[in-house]
Length: 318
Ligand SMILES: NC(=O)c1ccc[n+]([C@@H]2O[C@H](COP(=O)([O-])OP(=O)(O)OC[C@H]3O[C@@H](n4cnc5c(N)ncnc54)[C@H](OP(=O)(O)O)[C@@H]3O)[C@@H](O)[C@H]2O)c1
Image 1 (cartoon, rainbow, N blue to C red):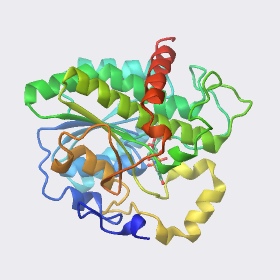
Image 2: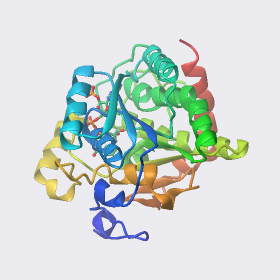
Image 3: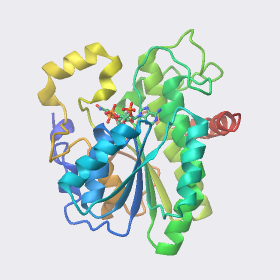
Image 4: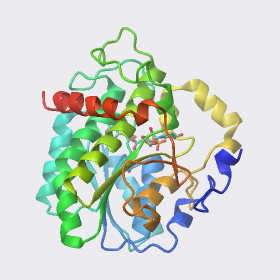
């Protein structure tokens, strides 16, 4: 079980909390956007960044949840700088509106955490006619990142501090369709397997970060892009998967937790977003706060380039 909980090369094991990995970090002066920040891992990520002094913008689709999330953080950390903004990643219009409003506010942007996700719903098309998991988990974040990229670069240049993009993926990326992606059939109901569709979208998160990292390095931008698996945690994510929820209730002791006060589920995200050890590291995949090796598809640079081109085409259609 050492791969689950054991201490590893940097001293952080699978049971470390977000609070512990960021213990000595002063993030005041940094501004971060956390998608899906109103609930689950995203909420605990936002709260930890806020605890370390960052100005955090939590982005989500249900503003009533956002108000409650913001209050929850302020009750715990009265001095926290937290705001909420509306963002539906399954709608290109909403992503564009969010980016426009963000840029209009003239805020800096040091950290973009692409965390929001949906897992294994029955076949559904997004408002733009795209399979929901690919639309939400990958394309929405792909478009959002592109629209905020100049802001991330400009903030890095004016502050002299590296900007970071963090994609929350999953070990489920290993269980995608054969060859990785259903090229040409991404939005077809026939042949859709909800588990593989989730794996495909999580593979996309890793490929996106890798290709983005390559491009950023090539142009010499002071911006990094990495991806990670946060661990297995019981959250609303399992709402469409009865058997996984049942297993997690029986074997809950094997899972990471996100209880009040301590969050193991947000540890790797906060580590990759804030820790000094990750300075200059780009294009990597992290598990339990350490660089890990993802699947062969996730290491395939050609696949990542193709995904990039397909994603540009799909996000520029509507
Ligand atoms: N939990 C795990 O065991 C696990 C394991 C591996 C990877 N992950 C990854 O971790 C990330 C966070 O998952 P979680 O476990 O914290 O799940 P969660 O509690 O269900 O949180 C997911 C968040 O994403 C938001 N979201 C979903 N669809 C959205 C959309 N169209 N636009 C904007 N926001 C949307 C949700 O908002 P609503 O409440 O409005 O739906 C929610 O705030 C996901 O990327 C997931 O794939 C989780």
